[in-house]
Length: 608
Image (tube, rainbow, N blue to C red):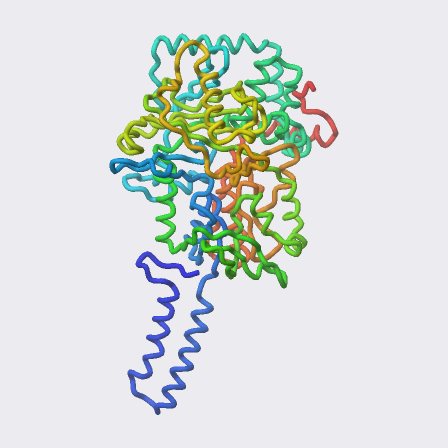
């Protein structure tokens, strides 16, 4: 693992040159006999080599090149360690964008695709800090300046006007509305408020107050083991209560099922988003996306910057095993791009691959050395995968994310081209010039029958998945008589290549998402392990934001780097890890609730 300074000189080259210069000095003076000079040279060389060995910084193998791995590499390289990143497929991991093969014509780039649309809300602090430190031409704040804020979001309902919600922010210019759009927005608001009975609204508010004033112990011990569906009594409530406040919120916030999701996870993030909307403790607006495809706006500049810091990359290398012996990781066994098994050794190892892949690399001896690794077997993942639809005419959707709350496959989507202007002109820059926009859709439910074929997404072929998703989008958006999505405007589609074997008895997904059923929090490992040269980084590692997010991946990488620096006694500054904002006005209520919790009493706002 050889790292380079900004001039391209490797540390090893520099050390070797210094040693050579030192050994040549006695020859230049001509003093002493030839044998004596040779002895002096030999002694000087040995001394220089020993000194160089002592001064050479530790080497680190970062295993995984997603957000967690790149963050770890960034923080380590800034502190002078020698870093090599090994990635099985493509740098950026699930966060990357990708090209649709064979679609670029006339000098244009291929159509842009992605595993799922990127969403970087204002509750994030650690990831934005990293983004500010990635240079980008013309941007004083690096790639962070490539973030833009959609002005609204929507709950798209089948059989009624869609509920459009503005996302105000200081200095944020509201989207311009036509009279028709204003009429529809007002109608949707009153339809929704009238559809949820007042007593249900009051009950939901009481449950939110209960959580907001709950102490940490009650959150960890009680609400972590209570499903969100049960916490808000969704089973006893109206259909609109269920689809907006139970299903809709969990899908938007944690991309998991309301019936299973931990109340601690859902409500903690809901609390953070509410405070964000109020401008409290926020890095920026509630909803932010990138102003170009992810690799162009973020990942490629990041990798280029890391190279200037001396980080080396090995792409196409797959981790098979972390070998354990004598109380340490002795080697990482990887498969190179040609399929040959290779042994990689380093002073330290950061495992930065998703948990469903990472736990396959931990053998029995390693698991015995640190029981928290075995607990990771209890962590659950599920499918959440993206599909993109390219249009030959722009659809009159909305200026932000939409949530199809009635769709069997739990679809969320965003129309991208308008958010990329003026940095990108879609028909000028991408494809064959006839596609003018991309609707990027996330499919969160893969095990429920659809409306077109009556089959689950996993039972459908790739083509059937595309047709089914398109049909569900039209059912949610074309239901009031307006042809929002037209079949005649559909240019093409692209489904994440990580999904394979659809329509067969054994479909697979290379990029599953950590989900948060009750009890998950207690099985998440720490970044520091009991093995002195192994560290964990990824969205499954326990950090303050209890959610599978890029923010969690970033924070966990910082925690892993801090643990490594502590173990080697490094004088380098530690990574800052910013927790979720805690409103000071609520701390008194939480202290009071801590006393009640210890006495076995309910929260004062908890009516049951």
